Length: 457
Image 1 (cartoon, one colour):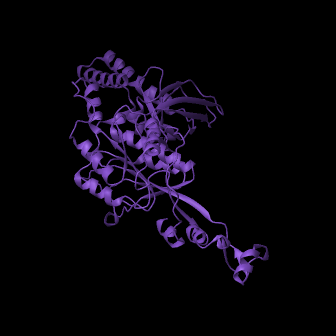
Image 2 (tube, one colour; image 1 turned 180 degrees about the horizontal axis):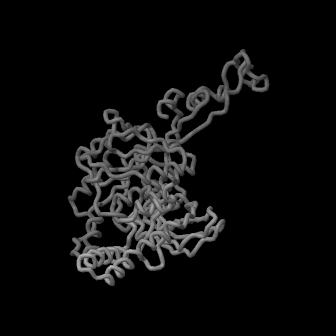
Image 3 (tube, one colour; image 1 turned 120 degrees about the vertical axis):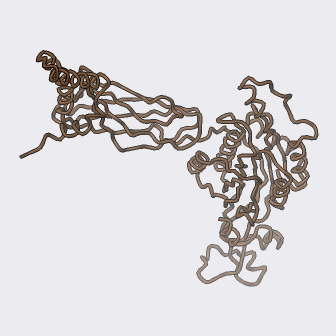
């Protein structure tokens, strides 16, 4: 003997949760009337009770009897957006059964940061037909957010019974920090390469020796340098072409206590956006970029712009008291151009930064006046802001002076500043007063030996 149909079994299993408020009211009233009619001996009341109980049961049967199957496809366009930008979510619902579906309430699950859940009402979907639903979401917060699962709600015409069917598929939407297109400026670099020899060594050996070496078995004859051969008295060949790469390290101060403000308007979010703009600029100009957060973890090699945006979309402040950079913390800054985005600094922090500055490379620090972000947050809450700008003798000025004395080129940043303008001011300052430690416009030093290059990678 076969049991009830699959849809009816699902409805019976979900009967307590599938009944709406109206259905529960009818069912409870019917049960109460049936008990009273049987105890008091009123046949008319029993007939009314049967009718009240039958209505929600019939509604359940009408919904459970519709054995339709819905297939859903979700697509994100695009799968990664920047903060404040719109992403379009496309849902395609197809009825793969032989029966038309009931009217459906479509509800997709989205994070709280995206606002209310999108809901749509679809009329009957005929067999083999499909409907497309499109909605848009935006977020002011960085991160990777789940989209889904999708839920379908169908109810009877009287609104007594509701059946919910949910999919399990989820998609991920990445919200990356906003970036600015930065103007082209000249930055001093440390060069590393692979190939044979140092440019400085060959240049010091004389004109005839530039780019040549002794002949080795297997070298092509067309590479023979005849002038150097006649001068040396032995066969000399031209060196293989040297491949040069410029290196840079971006230091993003990710200590939660070093920043002020909350949400998208905090100083930390400003620093993340500025770091993303800088990394994008350096990658497009052929730099090998490493990203350090200053909390003791090893720098991350950023190979592509997509990888950089994915990484900075997920970075979050860490509860630690002081910057942890250097060999002991596993976060040693290599001999490369260093661009730092720093919050509030203590004496120990400035000491670490002074030691971490590469001896033969440039060091540029965007020092955030976090008091300005505190004042901006107070103004949004309706509090009276204190006078703006760094005060004489304040911790901000002390940190700025200490970093400058250690050879860093320091650019102050306050709330409301556009990073693109600060970037241009860094170039103008470097052109007007070059630092003794040649952070800008300095001749490129000789490339590191292959062993050092491999170690830095």
